[in-house]
Image (cartoon, rainbow, N blue to C red; front, side, top):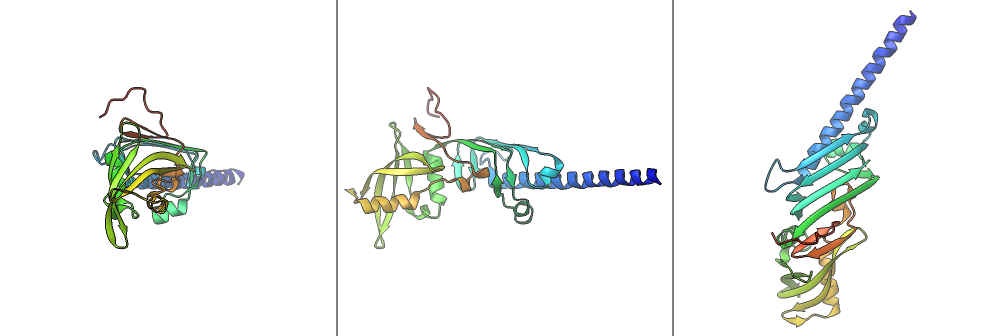
Length: 241
């Protein structure tokens, strides 16, 4: 009788482990599907590299992972375009219900999350063309030799379209990417402060943590030789590509 009871306990334990492993695999597969849907390589369908390291089956079933790494060159994260992307999340915990039921990646917590990216004028321009607040402004982007970001487009005032040129610098503020306007000209005339403030509110924040996988914060922004480096130190010598 005792042997039968022990055997039954063993069978139940094995069944429980098998169920947990199956459930955790389902969570891993769902996470990979969502990441591959939200992050793509525009030039190579197989160019997105993912590494997902689950925790124990019981923990992964509840949404915890040891590590998630993402790399692509170039990359698109929804409406964000990058010529290079590297991202790493250490011990992220995600909302399993949102993942499995709605196909949404919602991060509950993460020990450390960092995203490194490189963006050029074309990437920035494509992004502004798809953002709701700026898509009708037909903005063209230029990155100057002295590290400024110049925007040229249309600003609608009293239902009249007016050409504008804004000279900006990029910076990281509260984990977001912002453009600060240093000089704004509308119809080739220096614009007053209220128009500068209005345009800044339209375009900012350009990128914020909720737009990025695992709520990665933007801690630094450097502009050099026509490129914008997000959370990266520019190389000492980098020829234009």
